[in-house]
Image (cartoon, rainbow, N blue to C red):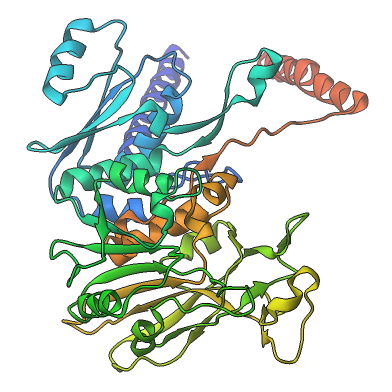
Amino acid sequence: MIRRRAAQEANWGIFLALCLTLFAIVNYLSYRHYIRWDGTASRAFTLADQTKKVLKDLKSPMKVVVFLPPGDELFQRVRDLLSAYQAASPRIQVEFIDPDRDRARVEALAKKYKVQVANVVVFDAGENSRYVEKDQMVDYDFSTLQMGGAPKVKAFKAEEAFTNAMLDVLEPKKPIVYFSSGHGERASQPREGTGILRDRLAKEGAQVRDWQSLGKPEVPPDCDLLVVAGPEKPFLPQEAQAIARYLSGGGKALLMVDPEFAEGAKAFAATGLEDLLKPWGLTLGHDIVIDPKGAVAYLGAQTFFASNFSPSPIVRDLAKNKLPALFTLAQSLGVQACADPDYRAESLVQTTREAWGENDLAHLEDVKKDPTDTPGPLTVLASVASDKPGKKARLVVAGDSDWAGDALIQVGGGNLILALNSAHWLLSQENRLAIPPKTSVETHLNLTGSQANVLFILFALGLPALAAGAGVYVYLRRRR
């Protein structure tokens, strides 16, 4: 009897040891080989395709040093984001340093990375390093300050900042972007200008300069991208020819051309860029786009949201995230075949079918669709490029410049993303295409009184009763 009992106990011991060993093996394998799954409705923990490509292409280790205290409101979000980076690439090495506790190490690394503030994230690839400050990782909602509350996180945009910082480290060469001036362009206007766009391009590593084209026979030879933002006065033939030669030589340009009125506002004025655009398969409509279906309330049908996008990488993220672009007082663009068959003009953003191009300037206060108007859908943004080797010219043309101006960018939507994506695509920096921020969504579970009572009985009373019942059952079985 004693031997039999000892044998049973030995068998149980061996079985328990095997179970523990199996559990340890499964736990180890799940730690080393696991699958990440994002169950959030906003895909808060899913990396953008641009980030995945950058991480996949890493050839050497990238060290990330986080100077954030554990109690910081962004600490857990940054930790989760960098964990996703590490899951996508084993070459990402992350170190968290508490600035409040490890002062000696913080001061040493601050000198090494030339960091002026504590709340930063540094990306170090050995010879080159870049840092991202806290205000680049998040947008705040300050409306709660009026009620005596603290600012709330409105959008978490660290992924775009982190990925661009990595690209700055991996691609230290800074592109040079020239904004034309001398024709009343938006770049020279204080409030309605393109200051936000210029600042963002500079923060992402570009050298932003002005080009006074009057009297200049050529576009600057070091120009990587030429931006023409809403000229109010026409370009002289010599200036347009200089831009044409620049494009023919493989240049890149972003041309945003508003409909301008001739003296007396009875006809549309020429911009001086019409002949320049024709060989590239684009024509200016010399009309005003009216879109009743996409119109913004109280602003008129000439101010509208557009969300009909092509599959182009410039607008892919807007379509994917359902972010419309806002335009106002735009003219339509005609898209035809290019003079060079190796190039292709493509419509990027279109209005709804209910839109039309208004040609009657005498009755703008009471517009209505006439047989002479251009029917929709109308193109308001187009691109030109070639996939043939050696054909390097790229062109993006818009029939409006307001969409890239500070006023409409601050409204929200997809305008800033569209402007940055256009610039990055023109510079052949597809990896830098803007990444939409993760918006903070508060989810509430509203229960009725009876539903709350059911949950209380189920979890507060039901689970303990179930455990007690199992214990009683085992006790009775053993007594038999």
